[in-house]
Amino acid sequence: MKLRIVAALALVGLSTAPSSDACINGVELEIERFQATPAGQVALAEGELAHDHPVWAAARVREQFPQIRSFDAKAPPLGRRAVRLYALAIVRSGGKIDEGAGWTSWGNREWALETLRDLEASTPNNPARQAELAEAQIALTRTRAAGVRTIEDLDGRDLLGSPYAYLALAKARQAQGDEGGTLAAVRRCAMMSSDRRRCEKPRGT
Image (cartoon, rainbow, N blue to C red; front, side, top):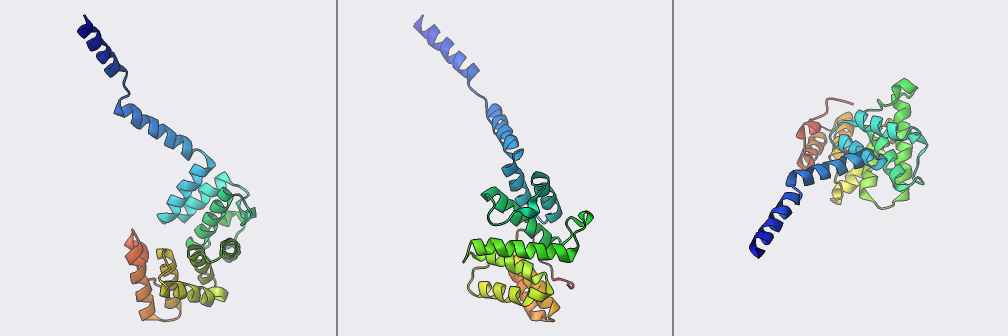
């Protein structure tokens, strides 16, 4: 009799134990819930920017934060992440964001430069922020030399961890007619990039 009861309880336990499919579905549901939040949308935008889709990233950020251009280094942490993304998206798209709203490529790059400068000043001695600011500087003729100096200094101290910074350096050297320097920057870009196609030798600026 006792054996029958034990067997029956074991069967009940097996029938009510959560299946692996149920666990997977639960995890997927939690992921979907997170992605629907502002923080989740910013995380998705970060992924889009990392995979060379700056226009998509900017659109996602702007949808969550319509007043994104009013954010600065004093914004809450999520706001700072969002405005940094937006500024980098502008730089990496060549300034082709919000054109329908009257923003020119030059105006966009100037806004991105000032935004990234503000963020860099709020986190001094941060090589990643310095490299991002240098990207924005290189995108503008008047600040290009300063950006090149920053990136070359970080590279010399082995503190440059972004393929985009090397790509910006390659473009700047191309504009200067420095063929050897251009190829060296392209090679460094390819060494740290998950997609070497983004590190092709620039045709011009």
